[in-house]
Structure formats: structure tokens, C-alpha cells
Image 1 (tube, each protein chain N blue to C red):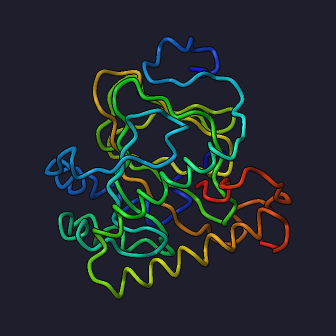
Image 2 (cartoon, rainbow over the protein chains, first blue to last red):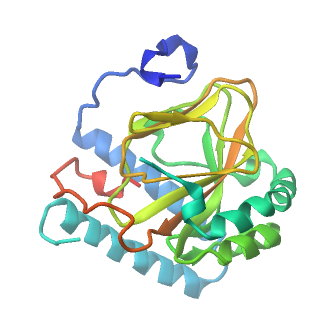
Length: 75
Length: 181
């Protein structure tokens, strides 16, 4: 089964298959979705120490990913 | 690309115990799941129930699924674990993960007909109690064309040395694309 050949009407929720245009507003919305998601996950982590450790870890991870993405850091 | 699951020792144990995982999953309700944040990839219908995220234990969820937690904790170099739910009619658009030396494993749990995962040029369907292992830095997409929810146990683990090819030099992308997983 080749998904490329499937007509889009087969998927009720399928977005348009056009290439995604990158806009600042679009990227901000993506960032907000992540913040909401991380907030919900943190509530289930259990305790302030683990939450602090997790936030620190995520911030370091994001910084590292940014530097990798921009080619300033080698993987 | 897909990897043959029997290359990874933990897979046999996981597949042998899949009904334990299935039983714990059956006790969860839809409200226990959280929508995956990359909604631009799927619209709505992709929800997760996390046990481990980037190596951190999600304590409250692990308490609800103690046997599944014990099983995933045996996996060497586990990074992320949780249930991934795909509602009927959901299509996750083609996307790629971030090159961090990980492999992804899906253990099929609730797998109705009409669900599949394309990785690169190869499309496979999940089977209950069987694992698929793939490199999520290859372009992949998934869909559920059935009228029932598909749920798998999703695991990310550090690939044993020499398994993954050398990553390509990263290119600059959108402002928040570094968040993509």
C-alpha cells in the first residue's frame, strides 16, 4: 500500500498536502503548543525537584539542538 | 529505514509480555492521554500517554502502569517510552525526527485493519504483540483509516554503536524546527 497514492479525502483530518510555508506566527504557535504540552507533562512528573531538573534539562537540550541546527555545534 | 527487530535483544522480552502491557493499557481512559504538540502534522487525533520522556520518569503515569514501566526500564539506553494513540481517520504527515542517534520501536497493541506506517519507501502494518523498529530520521508517516483507535507502545532508545549511518550535516530551518522530534 503506497500512502502517496491515497486520495486526501480518505483522511477526515488530513491537512492539505502543500509544502508548509514557514512564518514567524506559525513558529510561535508551534512553540506555544510545546509549552502547553510540557506543562501538562510536568504536572505528572511528581515533585518540584524533578520538575526543576526536567526544565533545566529541556532548556539545555533546546539550546544544543539550536546550535546543532545552525551548524555551530557538531553532533 | 526499518531494522529487523530481532537485532535488538529487548524485543523478545517485550513481545513475550505484550499482553501484560495490553491489560494495563486497557485500564486507561481517553482523558489520561495528552495531544501531541506537533498539530501541524496531523490536525487532531494523535495522543500520547508518557512513561519516560528524555530519560525522565513521569511518575504519576508510571504508577498507573507499573508492569509496563518495569518492562520498559529493562530496555538498555531507553530515552522515551509511552503509549501512542491514533484516532480513526488520523493521518500524520510525512516528517523526520532529529538526528540524535536514536532508534524508535513500536509494539503493536490495539491495531485495527487499515493502519500503517511508511518509513522511507517501505510501508508496514503493525501486528498485535509484534515490534517494528525504525530510524525516525528517515521520512515517515502513519495513518489510521479504520473506525477504531490504533495504540502502540512507543520507545526511543540509543542505537547500539555502528547501527546508524553517519548523520548528514544539519541545515538551517524554521525558528522552532529544532523542537521537532
